[in-house]
Length: 159
Image 1 (spheres, helix red, strand yellow):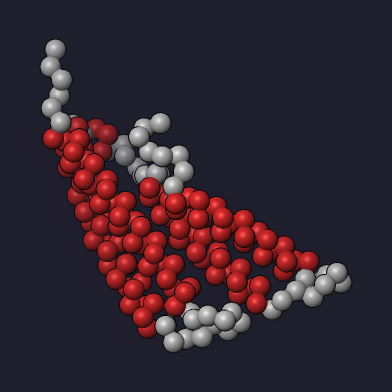
Image 2 (cartoon, rainbow, N blue to C red):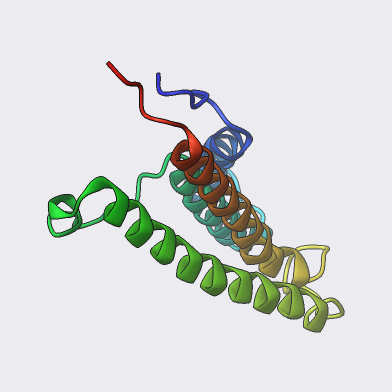
């Protein structure tokens, strides 16, 4: 592997949330049959699990640097210019994600006293998913930027 760990906290959490989500949906499906009556809160819980799973999975994609990209123009550039281009893109991305992180935090604060419809918790727990995911993405972008800087300071081997 290329120095990246195979499993990460983001991937593990997203996978566990997905398994719990499947269980929650099964409770909903069987709760609509004559077998038993499903709890009312499972629909809202499934929605919340889906949101958390999706946001944490986005952070895992960022960790793996697995976003879709069209690099055919960038691939035509020399290595140095390509490194500068990707650094500029990451800096813009960092600014956007930092702003989204701030918006997520302000949303958590704004919804702290809102009570969920069927779950015994505040709506801020749902909105915290965007804050946590954007924070993790900011962390991964910063790591990538510093990793790129470390690579650019290494000297090329001479023959």
